[in-house]
Image (cartoon, rainbow, N blue to C red; front, side, top):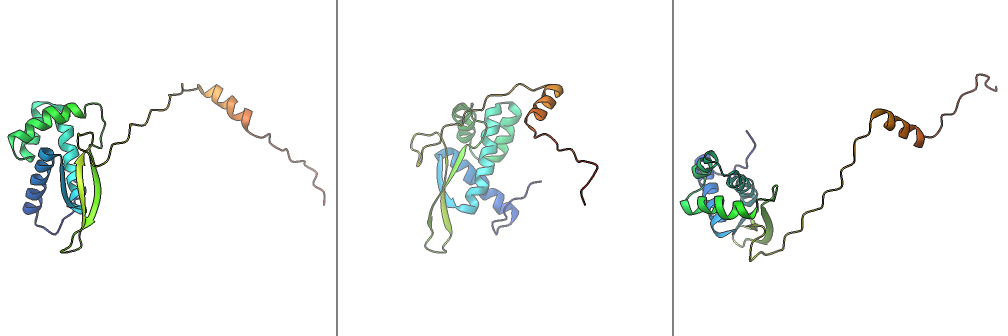
Length: 160
């Protein structure tokens, strides 16, 4: 099992809080929370979007077991799955905003990317480099000898 942040809460309270926050993130597409909670929400929200993209009955049941609300599940499997169908991962963005006044906790916005009212525009995807055809071992060996410096031969009679 992967390592989670404990967030100074018992397991039941922590999981309930994270489920609620992921559901609210899917519903509102942007929430403000502390940086530590946002990093945990990011992991779970990306997993929920992956389930939405999968689109099977099993994925729908797994998502329904985690998020709260039928409207959230419907949004995951329709709107968000369609929006991110070509994206391989990284569906959320974390933007640090301020220091909270009461306890000096660092706050951050977590939001889905590629939405209407984004705080910052997403970067375009990097183009893939062209694939080279694999060389057979003999050609590769000849190419290595071509660029390698010639070996110096040692003479057997050393001058003393």
